[in-house]
Amino acid sequence: MSEEKEMAFLDHLEELRWHVVRAVGATFICMIVAFVFIREIFDKIVFAPAKIDFPAFKYMCDLGKLVGLDELCVTELPFKIQSRQMTGQFMMSLTASFVIGLIVAFPYVVWEVWSFVRPGLQTKERKFSKGAVFAISFLFLLGVFFGYYILSPMTIWFLATYSISPLISNEFDITSYVSTIASLILGCGLLFQFPMVIYFLSKVGIVTPQLMRNYRKHSIVVILILGAIITPSGDPFSLTVISLPLYLLFEISIYISSIVQKRKLKQEAADLLADQQSS
Image 1 (cartoon, rainbow, N blue to C red):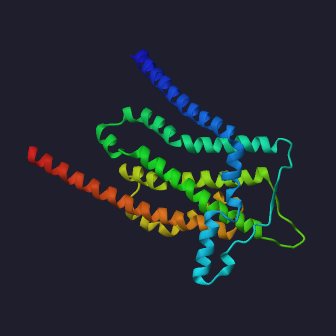
Image 2 (image 1 turned 60 degrees about the vertical axis):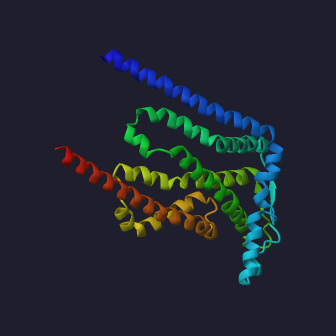
């Protein structure tokens, strides 16, 4: 009996290994493709939020004109990007390629994880988890777009224009620039998974909408802390920009949890009625 259990465990381990290999392989392939086009990627993607014609700056200027605040129109970003380390440009090429490869391959990676987990779920659990791969991938990409199109340019703008003395010029190292952009984008992608986490916790009964409403004030403090962790600059503007969407996600999660609770109560009532009729 123990040998059968050991064989079953080894079979699951072998299956997990192949899922991991395929997921890593897909990420690695996307990373190689990104590295081949790394010059175009840096010019048109990585450095795009540092240009005044970036969409976020255009919309911010339109908003400023609408409300009478011409200061919101970005006319220049006074900083230079340098590489002060011998391996700086090469290592940042690898970092940018890996981040882009991971983002592109993320839906497939989630699908591989789900393919391994799904056979072990019960029929009801599979039904409840239907569409999980799409939802997780959608929220991650939504967070990536938010981090890239909104948070990144706002952070660059604030840090490029912030000065404690006119004698100091902003010359950012390529390592600092790429690391900041990558952490903002991936951090937002992961944080936007919060509604899915609440969904599954509500399914198993760990989280309820009443519990989340009771701790709404505490959540504001936690959100501010998370926002401070995500924004390496720590500036109040970037903190506000990231904290407001996170709080909106928290409110959406309360709504999701309430829907899950209503469905559970409805299902429990139906099961109880069925048991009473059968008895």
